[in-house]
Length: 347
Image (cartoon, rainbow, N blue to C red; front, side):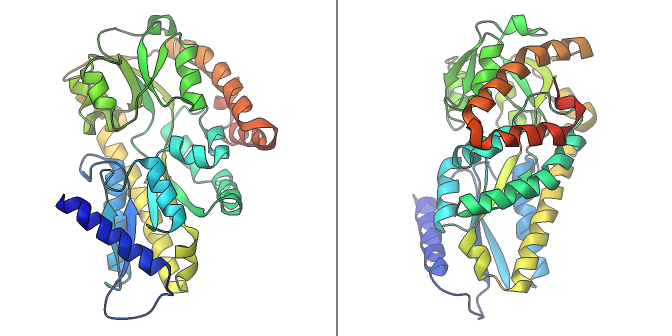
């Protein structure tokens, strides 16, 4: 109860700030940044990014600016964070790709499975010219601005309760958590002849514990920070998808910053994104994440031939679904993404 009151107070202050021009004064300029993960910066790349941004802003502004991190979904789910950022109730947020794509569909084009062989390649694309073009287009079509993409722990893998999965056929019949209506996720699951079951991220752990669903897909870091390794018996290291979180700012908030404040925010965000990547590498890089999973789970790392079989099963179905969802107007973004990703993303 106390926490919810404090959050409402913070949001009210932010709303008042959003209506007024910036003024110099004794009190530091407060920036509200929200996300849905627990603020465990030692275990979670997303939380590490938020903590780094807070520290960088305080240091670079010599205390003239401060960041309040609203973590663990205290202002709502990812869709709510995106909406509140657009309305200026909060200043920005780190939101799941699925929520961001629902508001800005061209982001769907980046969710092609098996587009990258190495996570460094994925990061380069999401920080490169294509990302800049997406940011420009987002600015023209929405009330939020793209700050960048935040690594949430590398590539997604597949886990399930009690089945050793090394081929697409062995996914048959598994009930997999999905955000119904999210085209790439549903298409991936159906392509493996598994069943998508609509469960929110907030309810995922309970659904796994009660065996309402058999499995899920996510990064190793996310699996560990949410304790899903205690509920799932098998992990298949597919490394099939790179789905970073999307960092957005309210457009009016950015417009009110003076040149020095804007530089501080931009540089602090860049440092925070880099910090998330370093944290992800420290947690799961060079097989470290798989080794931690193996303490509680049976871990199967796909051979190149097995991974290719998953790729052949999943990618055509997902691309077809993406082209349908994107439509004629936004279909070009899929072609631009495939070109940016290079030969790995091509059929």
